[in-house]
Amino acid sequence: MSRLFGTDGVRGLANRDLTPELALALSSAAARVLGARDPGARPVAVVGRDPRASGEMLEAAVCAGLAGAGAQVWQVGVVPTPAVAFLVSHLDADLGVMLSASHNPMPDNGIKLFARGGHKLPDATEDAIEAAAQDSTWQRPVADQVGRIRWREDAGERYLAHLLACVPQPLRGLRVVLDAAHGAASVLGPQLFARAGAQVVTIGANPDGTNINDGVGSTHTEPLRDAVRHHNAHVGLALDGDADRCLAVAADGAVVDGDQILAILAVGMAEAGQLRDHTIVTTVMSNLGLHVAMRQRGLKVLTTAVGDRYVLEALRDRGLSLGGEQSGHMVMPAFSTTGDGLLTGLSVLARMAATGQSLAELAALVTRLPQVLRNVEVHDRSAVVGSAVVAAAVAAAEAELGDSGRVLLRPSGTEQLVRVMVEAGSYEQAAGIADRLSSVVAQL
Image (cartoon, rainbow, N blue to C red; front, top):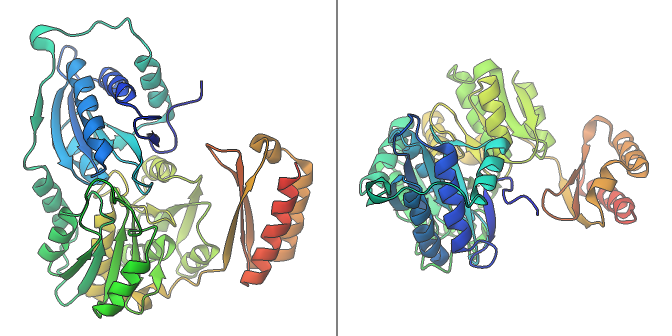
C-alpha cells in the first residue's frame, strides 16, 4: 500500500480517492496521535476549509472523526490555510485540519494537518497517524467523553487583526487588484487590503463551490494582468485556492514570481536588520538569477528539496527569518508558521509604500535566466537517479553551461516522471540542452 501523505497532506479526487470514510478515519487518528498535552485532557482542534463543494461533505466527516475521538472542535468555516495554522497557535489548540487541494482544480480536495503551535507535521508523525487510522482496536470515548463541535464566529476577525499588526505600514495611495481565485480568501482578502489603506479592485472572489482556481488565481494570471492594466492599478496580487501562496503583477502587466518576491522581501528585511544570518531559504527550483542577486548584495541562499515543508524545516532548524518558493509560497516565521499569501501581498505593498518604488523597480534586482522544464515519462524513476549514462549527459551539459547556467534532474515524488530543468543564458540554449537530456532520460 502506497503512503497516503504526500508533500502537503493527503490529496486526491474527492469522494473517490479522498472519501468521507478516509477523512473520518484520518481526523480521528490525528486527534489520538497529536492529542492533548495533559493526560486525561480533551484535545482541542480547529477545522477550516476552502469553498469547494466537496469540502462541506469532508468537513462533516472530519468534525465527526475528531469529536468521536473525544476532541473539542472549533469550526471556523471558509478561511485560508494560514488562518487555520494561526488559529491553532492563537487558540492554544492541539491540532488543526484544513480541507483544501490548494491550486488543484475543483474535483480534487485535500486534508492538511497542523500540530500544536500551527506547525506542519514531520514524516514520522504522518506515518503514526496513518497507522492509527488503520487501528480498529482503540477504545472509543462514550457519554460525556465524546467531543463537542462549536462554531468560532470571531475566527476571521482574529486572523485579519493579526495580519494588520504584522505589517503596520499604511498602504494609502496604492491601487491593488486582488485575484482571490474564487477561493478561501474571497471574503477576507478584500477586507484586509481595504483596512490596510489600499484602494482595492477584486476579481475571482465569487466562489460557488465549483469554480475555485477555474481560469483565475496564481496558476492563471491572464485575467489579473488584464485587470491591472484596465484599472491603471499599481499592482496586482494573485492568490491560489487556499491563499497560502501569492504571485504579483506589475503595473505594466508583467508577472513577478516567487523568486523576485523573495528577493524584494529579503532586501527590505536586511535593511531593517531583520534578516537573520543574512540568509534566505529557497528550493532547488529557484532561478539562478535569485542566487546572483543575493550574492551581489552580500546575502546568502540556503537551498532545500522542493516543497514548502522543507523550507519550513530549514527555517526552524537554522533559526532563520525568511524563506520561499518560486511558486509564491513565502514564510516569515516571526509572523506565520506556514506560507501565507495575504501576508506576502501585504509585505510587498508595504515595501512599495515605504520605498516609493514601483513593483517593477523593486523586482528588477533579480535578472531571471531563461528556465526550461521538461516532464519526462519513465518506467522507473529510481533507475534514472542511478544511471551512469544520465550522469554523463548531465556532466556534459554542466560543462557546456559553466557558470552561466545550471541543470537539475528531479524524480517526481508521486508519478513515474523525471523533471528536467535547465537554465542558460538564452532560451534557445536552455531548450536545446533540456531536449537532449530528456531524450537520454526517456530511453532508460
